[in-house]
Length: 282
Image (cartoon, rainbow, N blue to C red; front, side, top):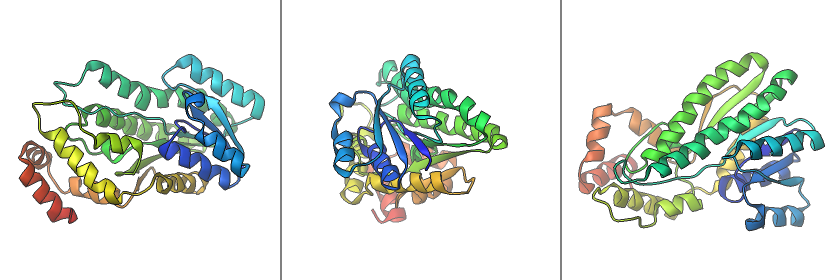
């Protein structure tokens, strides 16, 4: 069975993906920044006797990524599938959000993916075999206030991944993007939490939308099963929206001109939620 490396496995989508692959019989190297602070996955693996190896890896660090991957390769052999899942979010207006928050999103969500990908491409290329699956977001195709920092990092990820797919197909390496909608994770729940006071109304609007959606949001296990299906399938499809609202959100945005989208986001809450109710029954 193929060997899998998944980043960001301490909770949420990464945690569920590690379990899904291991339960399907794959050997999983589950990477997280601080395993000592996140013992749940190791405990679950021990309880079910699953082939999961916990790996200490900080995707923000060149040295950490290099050391972790070299150790896996030397002790366990080739990695067949890389799932770049580690990610963070920062919410706030462009004016008010600290530059450090923009940099943090790019460091983890974009450069972190590149670090892990560059470390493994030579090994996959030489074997002319492998899969790289990058977990993006609907926000990788749709940008709205107050998600500029997060959406920018995911747009960058989508652009890089699209180019990467064209580079690696000749070497029989499949590349794919997973685009979750609103999923019931701690990250999504934090978006729905109250933020710092702002002169812009969008944070409160965004929080209200997330809070309402999370009442019936899809679980992270749904995304994990999609990642498993993509990793074990034979297709070359690049983008995979996941969740009941993912494709509807993408289609909703695609039906508007850029100017209509900007106008909707710039307008008042009553109009925004009326359009949301009309188009989604929300």
